[in-house]
Length: 196
Image (spheres, rainbow, N blue to C red):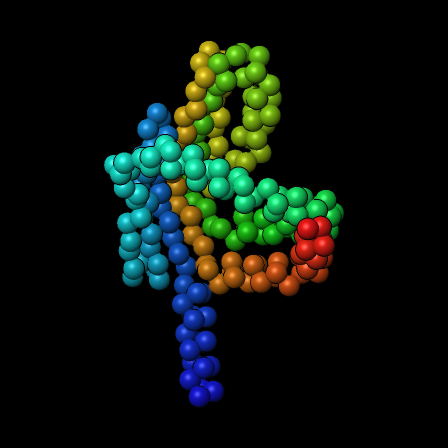
């Protein structure tokens, strides 16, 4: 029994250690187009994850009802989460987790192109003052290229992105476990419980 459990757990660890590669091309220019292809186990398993964009949109009444239900359920949780956000150690731990997660994702030829405008040149200028520097900060030669273009005349949002990302699921599991067992996370959970 013990040997069988050890073999089973070892098999799970081996499977999680195999890299998952996602090659994608997404575009939003009035309509959404997406092409997603997944490779696992060094290319032994292939899957086409492209969404079926021809499906009909959900009924507006149902969507409105769902949205209302979502907002109604989230109001109580929002205040509890805000209690944790105010805790400095929790914020630092979450930033560290996001940074480690970003580093664990291997990126190749990832390209983001965004064209945005708010319809008012003054408002677009204020938005560009924030987004403009981000394009340079996020770009890394050979890995990531980010290009953000302002449109000072029209209210528009166009996005085009493509690239390949590779991740080892076992790394993500270790990072998530490290976050869950961290003292900052436990203190934040206690704060969320006591603030109800």
